[in-house]
Image (tube, helix red, strand yellow):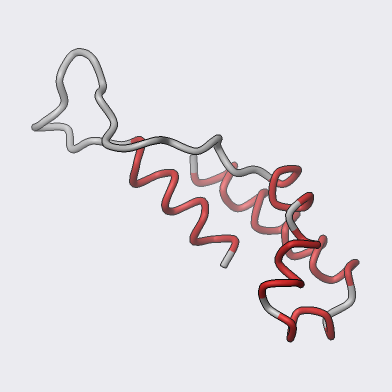
Length: 76
């Protein structure tokens, strides 16, 4: 789920190289760029939306977010 937030942000802010204008005009409202701190602060809400996440230790979820953040930083 957290990876989908980052992919959504990427898709909303990119444009194809053969179709870019000088001024980028994204379609729709662009949410703030999801990073580790943004996603970590949303863990409580995630557990409410997905009750099965309550069975996963918070430390494990935070470590997974750190790994995801590191991978995205290498990618971008």
